[in-house]
Length: 119
Image (cartoon, rainbow, N blue to C red; front, side, top):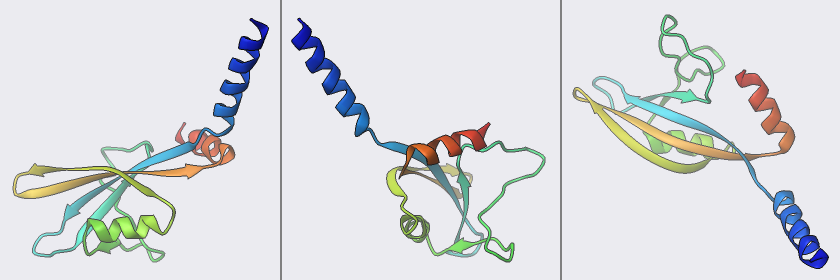
């Protein structure tokens, strides 16, 4: 019995040592009127306000970043270590709104830091 408990303990311990920590984000892309470009909003789970409106990605000068397509946005995030998980589109009126879920493997420390900033 002791041998079985020891084996079970070692198995659980080894699994927990190799467990991956992920953070997730959602890219929400909307097409620009009369253009093929896409504006992307990034949802990390942060608090949002109805009164502030939609906050799109901005460059270092404060201008909205426009991507050629959602794949262009994914390539941008892929260079930063994000991995694709799932995608779907919702049609509102005549406009498609694209939702792409991404994940990124992080250390335990980075995960804890991300969770603290969400509160």
